[in-house]
Image (cartoon, rainbow, N blue to C red; front, top):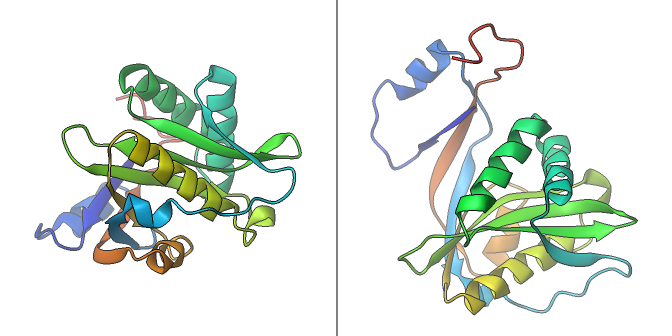
Length: 192
């Protein structure tokens, strides 16, 4: 279970209340905004790396396993949540980069109906595949998809790994966010 606080919100006592209920703060992230066009650039892919959208149940499970490995989070609950969201949100897209028969990078595109914004979420690259332009290529493909659907602006809660990629494309940090995580594994009250 996750909760996020925002640097621009005023909620006195929220940090202490989250800690008191067992939430642990993670590293702060940068809230970034910019244009989709600035990200929709040609990025050469390594030979043997392909990009595609993911919708089928087995692919969603593989996507979730990638996310679980990178972010150290439970795979099954994520797969169930993503499958449920894909079933009801026709705008959300899961994108994956594959190499050597497995997903090595993945991320979500979450357009916000009724706005010009689409969000970049869950960008994850296996450690052995970082620094090769794969995340940047996947981000460019998600931006092109947003533009095809009429979304011209993008936002992202970015880690220190992905923030510089967005900054090089002209994105600006407008605030911060701090994720808090509550690990329900092994808790007696987890089903409540």
